[in-house]
Image 1 (spheres, rainbow, N blue to C red):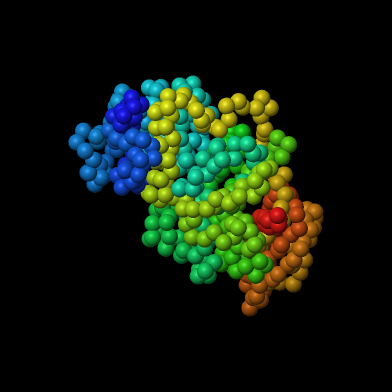
Image 2: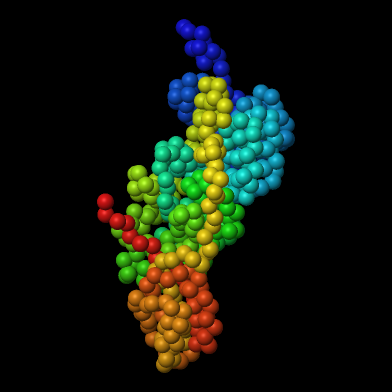
Length: 449
């Protein structure tokens, strides 16, 4: 046996996990269940030497070895035996301070914390480069789909032009059920919470905040522009009704909460919004808790990445993949082989975020009005005064009296988001409009190769 083989045989990669919740438990399960397979592919085994959580019951449930568990996360990141720290606490603090401390101590870091990454991207990637350690975050976007790996490695020679995706499984599940069962948002949300597909406080998901955090990470990876999630135009799904979903199908679309980002001549457009997706588009058939990302680049053209976007095992799978990548760096003696941002040299001419109102598309608009003569012309007149060309108008039903509310459904030709939002404000100000209006973007279909 060669000296190198003996060294490989005697070594283990010592790791620590901060946070033993859902994803932490899933990561531990994968390391145990597939430990032999991972060792075969890596060449050496992983050894979980430290694990921290504020709840000792979680550690007891996982049956960790004596001496592994502690409630002191700071002691874990300072432990000289630990080579890779996995941060699965979530949130901003103490996760940020612990990651920075781990890097300061020369440890590689793996995280699935999209909230932290999107809020402190520059600080974290700069520290990783400074300390020459790897920062893995595959699990932060799209769960078990190897999207970050694809962008940083598989498409490294390609100029990505647009990324469009379904990156929140909770919203996709709710919209799928609403379309199938023709039941309102509030009722399906309760069902999603009962089945564990939505949190007790669902705002992070249904208001589009989670999707905006993930999109901020993708914008930096794809276009080299660091954004705060709050800079991304965002609208959630709470105002979507079964009528909107039924109408979308009648028109040849499916309603999805989409994230979208594109770059043209240094200007980056980014938004999270309900959108009508043509039935012929690959994203239209993505249902339930699944995520999917549709990339368009100058060499491959369009490519689709589909899988489970959340959950203990799918996200744990991504975490372990990052662990293996860090371990390979350790074993080969590589130093900061993969820059966290995917680019070793950042462009001196940084792109900038395009104004939210400048994005253009066709739109779907629902307005609920009193059933009176002249109402339709009043609504279309407002749209016309804002320069919005109408493709079709449909009025659904008739009221029993002039005080009954009926929906008017409008599909426009291409307009700017600024024109549409200004027109909506004026429409909502009409005395005959009984409830707030709802706006969805309409994305174009795919081009045949």
